[in-house]
Amino acid sequence: MDVKVLSLAMLLAVALYAAHAKPFGMVERCWCRSTVSTVPQRAIRELKFLHTPNCPFQVIAKLKNNKEVCINPETKWLQQYLKNALNKQKDSHKKTRQIL
Image (cartoon, rainbow, N blue to C red):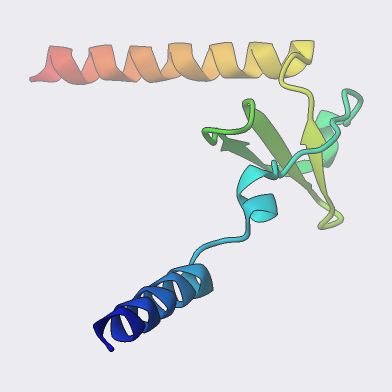
């Protein structure tokens, strides 16, 4: 009798875990399956940067027409944009330290 109760408890525990866990296919999927390199900068409304454990660095651009496209992170203008943003952040951090 105890073996049946224990087996039922284990089965319920596995079922509850499976109900809350994501399917394996969903965990392994990356948002960007393909990227583009030729997006006009004037058409971009917003940039999102995603870094997840199972996927490479991903850049998603929301365009003014509400479409979303994945931009190749190796694109020259994007690399320059990121470099400028980091420099700007460093400069503002230095100014804040000087004031204090």
